[in-house]
Structures are given as structure tokens and as C-alpha cells.
Length: 233
Image 1 (cartoon, rainbow, N blue to C red):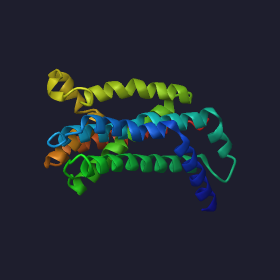
Image 2 (tube, rainbow, N blue to C red):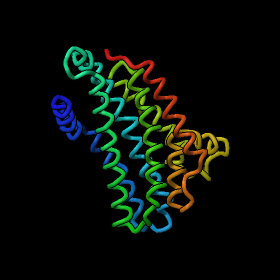
Image 3 (tube, rainbow, N blue to C red):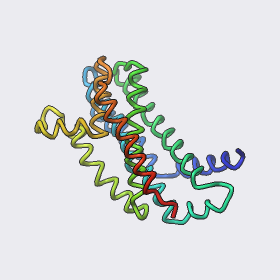
């Protein structure tokens, strides 16, 4: 337990110093503040986009880049012969990335509701949607980390996935302005399912079973594939 606590402390300090962690907090907040100055009914559009963006940045950028960099530098291999196993490091990293995601979403809620006048979503629906969406996005990040040979390529793969998923998910263009086939396909992407579910939550309807199922399938299936291909060295 003492070793695990020390590992958590060290990894927390490293995460705080990581520029990607700062960007994951500030970029969604910047978009919310710049475009949400007169937010009223628009909270059903802008806040779901900002929250989805925050979750996506952590899941697709920060998580895979960190894990792939650790493997590239031989850290995971060296830990395998110490009392701190690579599995412990993986667990700590997942928990810290989850804490970062919670912090980013909490800041967005605080600013959106407390300063910009958005209404507060129903807590059970919001928490359930964020849980499913984060699990789905993290699973994709784990797969990137499993397949990328190094940190730089993991970051590159994250970029290549992020922008198409963001477009299809309705983060870059309103869904109603997209071709029907793309709008339909976007609802079955992890970002699209999360954004749509959050939109429904802020609209008062709650997430649809199909969106929750979509995110759950990503979380389970992609995580299993990532576990199958993940390498410690």
C-alpha cells in the first residue's frame, strides 16, 4: 500500500506538469466562455459539445500518449522486476486520467451554470451519461496505446481519430447541417453518442437506451481488444 501511494503521488506530480493536462482543462473552457457569453437555451448545444470535447481530449490524446511514452522509455519493462508492477502503474494512470476528466467537466459545469446562466442537468442522467462516455473514450485511448510503437505516434493516432470523430459527432458542425448518412453514422461513434446523450440530458429527456448501448459496446469490446494487444515493452 505504501508503494502504491508513493507511485500515485509521483504520477500525480507528473500529470500536473504535463501540458496536455492543462490543455484538456483550458481548451473546452475557452470554447465555452468565448461562445457562451449569452448562453440561455444554447446550453443544450454548447455545454454538451464542451463536455464531450474535454472527455475526448483526455481519452484520445493524454491517456494513450502517456502510456505509449512509458513503454517507449522502458519504464513498464523495468517496473516488471520491482514491487511496483506495470499493472499498478496502468491502474494509477487510469484513475488519474479519470480524476482529470472529472475536474475538467466540473469546471465546465461551474462556469456554465454558475457564471453563464445555463440550467443544471439532472444529476443521475448526467453522471450515468458521463460514465458511459468516459469509459467508451478511454477504451479507444487504450487501444491507441496498445498499438502505437511510441508516444509520438500515439499522439498522432489520437489526432487522426479525434477530428473525424469530432466532426461525425457534431462537435464541429450542427448535426442538422450534415448529410443524413453522416449524421446517422455519427450517432454510432463514441463522441456522437456522448454528445447526443448530453444534449438529451440538458433538454430534460435523458439519454436514449441506444446511445448508452453504443457507448457500452465501445467500452467493453474495444477494451478487450486493447488488452489483447497491449505490450509492456
